[in-house]
Image 1 (cartoon, helix red, strand yellow):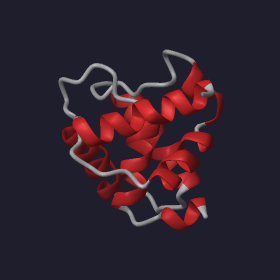
Image 2: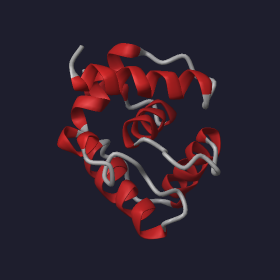
Image 3: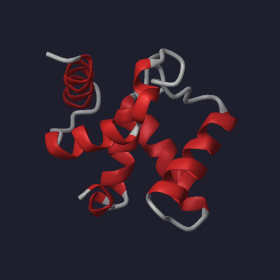
Image 4: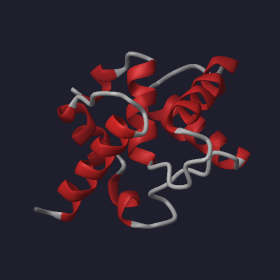
Length: 113
């Protein structure tokens, strides 16, 4: 199994066990690939849920640039809702899992088709 496949399995496990979501494995794989090399770096592989500047980066670089959403308070509300689902106390919130949940939240799966 490749390193990426191992990470995808770890992300699927987090979605099932921590978020209580049954993952769409094809979409999770595409979202993970879309994260690029960031998933292999310990710092960039996770999102700090309490770091406002990091959440702003998720909003600008993922929601607005990648998913093509317009800036509005709804974007930060969605990010916070996803972090609540993941568990605020959860130390390692994987970027691919957060991006997957945001993609599903906004119904933007078509971006990864």
